[in-house]
Length: 409
Image 1 (cartoon, rainbow, N blue to C red):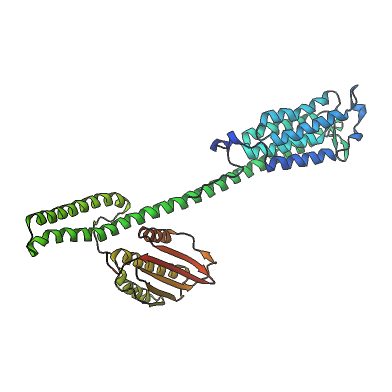
Image 2: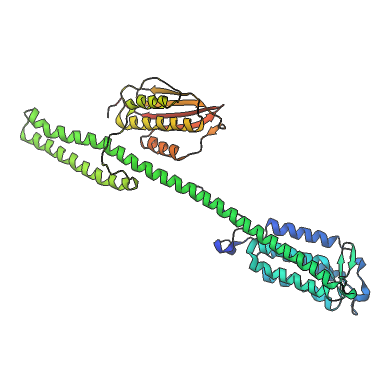
């Protein structure tokens, strides 16, 4: 059974949070973008006159850059701590009256990472930090250093509120987009998981149904022969003159046969619980009935050619061969309508089988196991046989081989 593995966007409440990786492609990729933006920012253009007694320090900007880049990388695992670390460099505004705009970009990148990885509630933390810095920038005379040089928000000219509105729209759009991407990813994960669970449930249901039918088959075949043993053991004293010990022995054999038959019925009753057919025994088709099955298909308009001979086939393999032909004809009608089906019966000393072929448009390779093939495989495997089903060079082929000693048990 295939085990479903969730994607990188799986929600922590489904077990991902405790083992969430420190590094992932999204956080590292956005951190690299932030780092490239910081490297491209010309620190030599800082307006020193806006500093209050403390000139801009190269070491401070480098340290701050490392902090915000690391904060983006670690934001998914520790949203609050990473946000506080990325806000720390902005404390320099109290003395320098300037900041590197890449620090604000880092908060936006963290908003994307945290919202997509951990959900919108945690994503609000870096988004609120970015909004707070934007408010500070757009209502004061501080300078933002970009790769194109130092710029202001226009607050000194009374245009800061326009800039603030644009910043808030950008932050909101970033947050909403990341949240929508997370919802879409979770929906896709759930759809894949539901599809996988549906396939597994279908396979389990198919196997349960086929095993229940096999229980009927086993009852019909084995019970018939056990009952024959009991009848022959009990009738032997009336057909031959036997001494008392021999009669008692045959009587015991008859009792054992009836007991075995009772135990068999009890055991098979458990296996048949998934079957809605109430009959304990019922006639089952055999190998000899394949000819009638083919005639029915021909009467329905299907082109079927059958050749070869099985001779005498025991009940169990005969039933499996009948069902295999039935399934093969059904699949041919469904997937290759109008194509001629060829059935070749095969017989060896201790084996019996068949090979069915027809033209098909299916790609080369084994056919995916549907309900019919799963059931057929169960029946064949129960008798120790083998089954092959696939396509090659535009020809669909079904081959079944079962052990059989010419109808003798």
